[in-house]
Image (tube, rainbow, N blue to C red):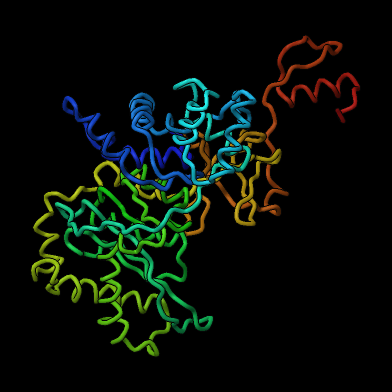
Length: 446
């Protein structure tokens, strides 16, 4: 499987989570699960729609069964930005939509059929949508706000659901001056246990990936990861890591923090019991405050009775459910590789590539080819190059121009010689070829 996963393929796999995680489906289960999935709302990449048709989900499912996640990558349409709708239908759609921008595709179709402009079931929804999009009439006006139904729930077992979020922290004194820090945390739903938490100088995808890596090393793999809808959480690298670890990502809808209410409550507890009690003037590095954080989490928070757990502690609930925790298993030996970042690069004629403002040498045989540069983002170190299929092609070393001044160049060991007097037309070594030239008084500068 290619290491570069298309964002739409990741989204489609996240929709298929309840199906993809099942090894076997009983008779009638497939239809029931697809119907349930089609009734949910989604943040569809590149679209303002939030609903999926059951037939679409079913098609994705069978496509995934045949070819895995790579088969879910969307294919480019050959008729993009064109329409096969007749001119009368185009004019009628524009008129009806401009009269009332809130009209849905179903309403537009019904009106066209009643007016006799289109035959019944002649028009496909996707065809109408693409046409309206080309004429900038696809957006609907916002509907009146409605009350969102919310219900309290708890995962059946520890490890089933984790929540991830970032809390803005205080400024601390460092060797380079005052800097603001951010608390990145992953919390288990059933036990309220902190899988891992760490202060970082940012809230980027890299910071979140670092916390996730430590979390799975300590606490195993979660079934689902509920995270924010921000750009850092939607990064290709984070989604690719979760796809390879078979962690299903669920994005909270924008401006709805209630979706991570348990983690929000932890942040409140953290401010009251940790930040309010710590002497920030005594902190002189991020390593210092993280050391205090980890001691507080393990010795205080995990052993503190929780009202939402019937006065049991997070650690006791987690230990009770250890049998249900999914270990790293086969992922353990390749975890570092999974968390690496990958960048497409073209190898120059001198066998070099560039990354992060630096130039590196790769095996000279790769000159002129496209390769994937594998980087450890946490150590900020280029490791090796590989093919698009994930096969290692060779090491990566920083370019040393001074050393290359005295470096022995590779030359072909055997070359085909031209016809020279007294010499048979046979394959000679480079040295034999030069000697033959000298004997026949040819110029050596060829």
